[in-house]
Length: 183
Image (tube, rainbow, N blue to C red; front, side, top):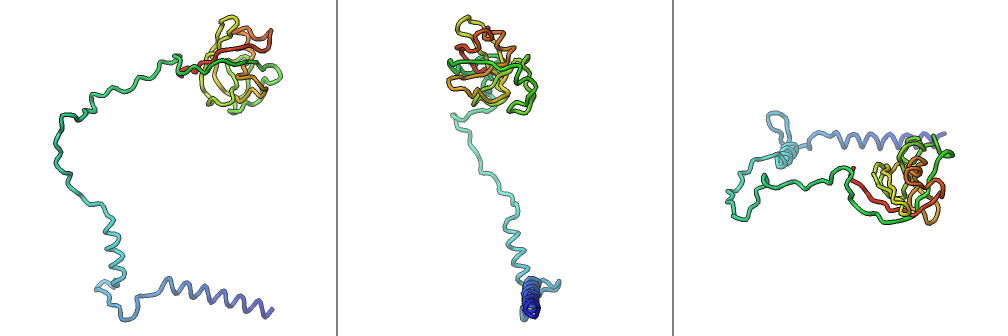
């Protein structure tokens, strides 16, 4: 018990010494101005003043002939909605339906097998792609809202409705071309 008393006493002494060091008045012999500010306080203020905003006049600017007038620059044209931004190549598509209907997708929305959606391993959620069945030429536009497929050799998983649009339901899997569209 006596040992605890000594530990607490030491802790209190250290705390008091720390507080005194932080809140100490100006050192004896240090002059203060008529407002009671010490030289150290005045130095602190002059240091802060060094970081204040100050006006610097801009140098005169001559306009060389090769200068560009930014008001005449045309902004780059964005591709129109639905236009192909990039051909993502070919791969194998499959579909998922009844068993997954109503479950949460990777982006947090409920899977609807009747919606025009798809799962892709890397495309950002919300990407819009055109998927074309290479066997019959039929295509569908889907929005990426899930991750997958998780079967080797497959590139995209379509909702049942999207698979029906391009004739994949009977075979279950088919070779497709995938194109990223502007959205």
